[in-house]
Image 1 (tube, rainbow, N blue to C red):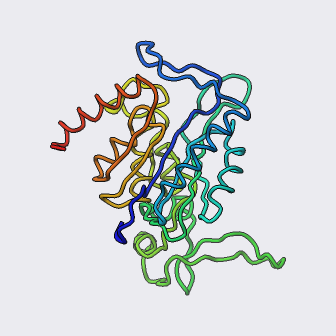
Image 2: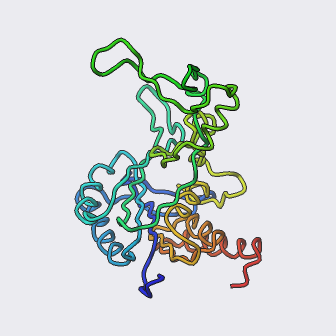
Length: 289
C-alpha cells in the first residue's frame, strides 16, 4: 500500500455451497467433494473467514459468493467477524438452473464487506432505463417522470425532473439526463443482457461463461463477473486473493487487469486447470513474468 503496509486488498471466495454432491470435470475427473454440511460447514468457513480478515489491508474488501442454501447462516458469521466494515448484498441473476414443478434456482448471492476507508469504484450505470425514458413528460419547468401519488394522501402525482430545460426535445433531454445523472452503484447485479439494460445496468454474464473461457471445470464463473468485482475494489498492483480458486477465473482476470494475485486450492484438477490456464494466458497477453 501507499502507506507501506503489506496485505491483501481484495478477497473473493466462491466456497462449496454445502450441496452434498461430488463435482467432476468435463471428462469425469474428480474436481472436489462438497460434502461438509451443518455445523461442520459453518466452522469450516468461519476459520477461513477469520484468517482472511487478518490478511486484509486496513482499506481492503472481501466478497463471498454463496447461494440460498447457507447464505443467511454465513451472513450471521460474517456480521460478527467483519462488524466494523460496510456491507452490501449483491444478487446476481445468473439464469434458471433446473426445472420441475417447484421454483428453480435463478440467482446467487455475493456478500461484500468493505473497509469504511476502502476503495469502491464501480462502473457507471448506463443512464436512465427505458422504463423511465419512455414515460417522460414535459411541463414549463422541464422534463419529468411521475413516481406515484403524494404520501400525505393528496391526489397529485410526485414529479421527478431529469432535465430542467423544457425547450429541448425529448431525445436531447434524455441525453442531458443520462450525462448529468448521479450514478450510484446498482445493488443488484443482473446477468441477462436484456434484463440488465432494462434496469440500466452493465450486464455481467449469466452463469454460463463464454465458450472462449471454458476450461472444463465445474462451477466455473464468468470472467465478466470477476472483472466487475476486481475493478470496483482494487487498483493495479494490488494483491487479489482467492482461497477457493477452482478454475482460476479470479486469477486470470486479476492478471489481465494488472493486479498481483494469490490463488489457493487443494484439488488436483483445480491446480492443473489453473496452471494450464495461466500459462495459456501468459502467451495470449505477452506476459513475460
